[in-house]
Image 1 (tube, rainbow, N blue to C red):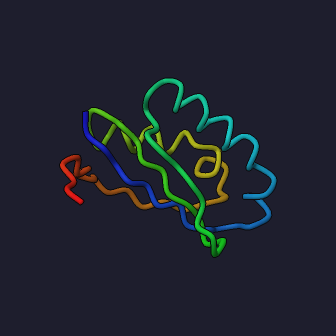
Image 2: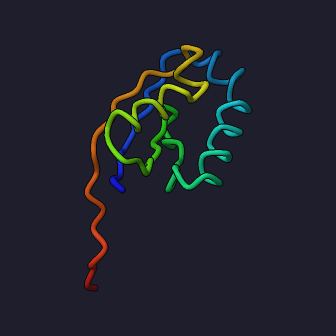
Length: 90
């Protein structure tokens, strides 16, 4: 599996407010399915970040485009493959 960082930038604040419950339900379902590793909003209100787990970029794009925030026009997105470092030394 690969990891993909999806930056969701604010496109329409009103649509984001209206569709937030659908977006959160979508994320819960994807987390339960194992395709969302983590997610959260930016504290300045500019959008958020989702880390997807997927076979390839096309699969990650498909997941991102199913998010109601994207499909209903509340947010734009940018996707990048992310190499999660797991060997940290403190």
